[in-house]
Image (cartoon, rainbow, N blue to C red; front, side):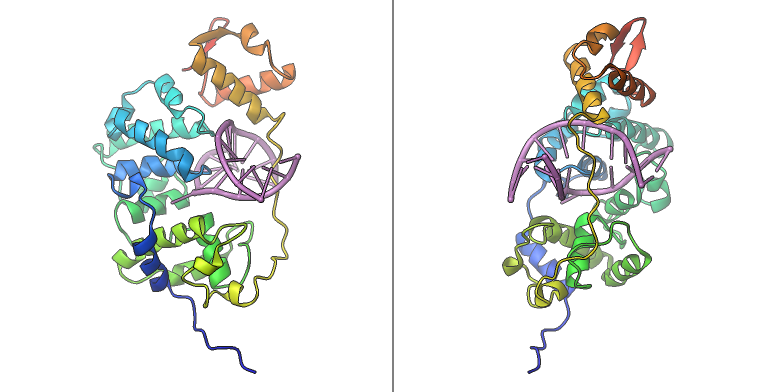
Length: 290
DNA sequence: GTCCCGATTG
DNA sequence: CAATCAGGAC
């Protein structure tokens, strides 16, 4: 017997679902600067962890010019334990560029945005869509997963963005800028809230009857997912330990910093990399935030 | 391709 | 324990 004709997944359906179910996130009603700050913080960091940091940050530095005048030490301190602290120094640099080269206004073109430090293809397009409501293709891990499942019938998107995937994503973007920017937020929201990596809530999904993957019986992806190296015992962990100490104490001797390190060689490697990244600085035998 | 952070969840 | 997370730079 013939399967039920259920139709194709529709971006309009996702947009309708979004208008009814969107989370009330603070960066959804803010300035372009607030959007840019949120996108930096949200790179590889879950929404619930970002919210309090974003709120404090925007109270402190409500404009790019404000952040541009802050010291690196203050910026690194304010980043706290959000992780990937180079994002903080890149955001600081971006603020100075915006302040000096663009009159303090976040640029609204892809070329100018992607030239900012810490801004890649995703972040540039996200700012264009969320801050300026432009028609662009916003492809983060959530959107890729939604398209992969609903339109391609695959459980997981490929490890790296393919030409096919990019073309499909481009073809799905609604025509009007208004609908397109809503789709950018809506597809991301669907992937973050319902169409999650593990245990997706397909029964609550507006695409449940049209999703190619769900209607096919949720087949497992064949390709293997790349696993990341373990954090415990890594250089990254040692870098985090050093930064935490220097946030707590204004300045420490090199010997004091090395004292409780797990591995002396690793400690030196981590310390030198932090120096090279401009996240710490030296004065004589002392180390401190820059 | 590898490295970069740390809280949270299974 | 391991995997995940609104990526980017090298």
